Each structure stands twice: as C-alpha cells, then as structure tokens.
Image (cartoon, rainbow, N blue to C red):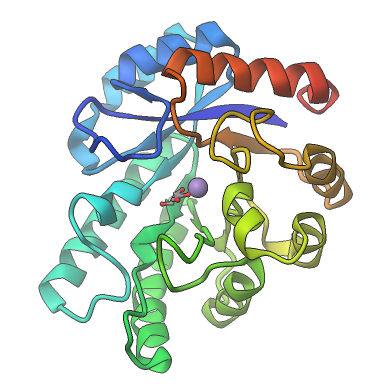
Length: 272
Ligand code: LER
Ligand code: MN
C-alpha cells in the first residue's frame, strides 16, 4: 500500500478536512515526513498550475494520490443533486476540469459531499439528478482514463449515501466501470455495521481509502480497530492508496508525524 496525506491550497476554508495548506509547502512537508503522495483538495481547477505542480512533485519524489472535491460543495455550494440548471452546468464544467487535471495527476477524482443532499425531496428525483450528472462526468472521465470515486459520508455531514452498502446499491444503478467507491474508515465507524465485514461485502467497488481514527485524529490516536481494517484490506487484495484525512490536531506537523509513525511501526509490512 502507499501512504498519502490530504492537503489544500492556502485559500482553503478553515473547515477543509486537510492536514497541510499551501500546495508547494505541503508537498515538501509530506515528502520529508515519509508520505508517498498527497491528495489535493481543490476549490477550483485553476488553483494550481500544472507545470509548477509537476515540478514540485518531481523535486520531492511524490505522487498525487487523488483530487478531492469537498470544497466545491463546502465553499461553492455545487452538488450533483441540485435541480438548478445553471449550477449543474457549473458543476459539470468544474468536474471536467478536475478530470483533466487528474488525467495527468493520479487518475482519480473524489465525490464526497459534492454528491449533495436529499433534503426532504423524493428519493427517486434525487437519484435521477445524481445519475444524470454521474453519467455525464463518467463519459468525460472515460475519455481521459480517470476513475470517479464516490465516498460514503456520515449522517451528520450529509443525508445521502452514508454507508458502503448504500453506496454500492447506487453504484450498481450508475453501472459504469470508472465509477467506483472510496470508503473512509472515519465515516464507516459511524455508519457501517462492522468495518471489516463491510469492506469484504463491498470489495469489488473499493478503489481508494481514507484513514482517520474514531475521533478524526491521526491513526492510533483513537479507538479504531486497525487490525480489523488491515485484515479486511488484505482479505480483499487491496494494495493501493491509504490517505490520512485527519484534523490537524494538536498541530499539522504532529498529526502527520503521528500518522506515519503509527502506521509504519504497526503496519509497516503493508507499506512495502
Ligand atoms: C468529509 O467528511 C470527507 O470525508 C471528505 O473526504 C468528503 O468530502
Ligand atoms: Mn473522507
């Protein structure tokens, strides 16, 4: 497996779920602390120059693990289940641009809270709005060789697609090879029956994984059963990115250092 850390540009909202801010500074830090990659949380596609990004990654032997889109929802209020035509157009264009960026960096674009809420509406209408946008962005992603990764998110953040079973039920309706799943063990701890069983039940769709402990602090700082998680990931043959999407507590450097120390000391054999 490879270890990545969530980062954002300097302009990210204070509540963005990232450890480091400032793309260049974050890449330098991530490399120095022992990560293999960074997950880029972007608000807009033009926030980072491709040329500079490529140079910073090369200089620090780092990869982009994925582009994440949470701030497109949190800061710009754009989402798949919106009925407003102009907003849908803007969201579609934004996703096409993220996909183009991902085709050069990482090959993955996340859909977390950007899927949008049900918000008291008829579930059929909400799913149809989601499916319509899902197919449009999947068409574009297919041309660029990019996968879209839908993330179940806990009920206190959004009311649509909270656990892996619900996510896979919807992904079966999407029915596109490049539209798969990104489980986050922090949300799974709240929503799924048993983390290990849920990974195994839904294994065909697992493409990327977010790590955090039960309190959303660094792995090892809460009461998450990491043995169960690594056993399940091994059982399903998962050997790809595990990305720390944690609160920068008590400060970004300490949180990042604790993540690397805990995972490499206890589960080093998985990070060959
Ligand atoms: C939000 O809680 C989260 O986990 C993000 O990765 C998705 O927006
Ligand atoms: Mn997450």
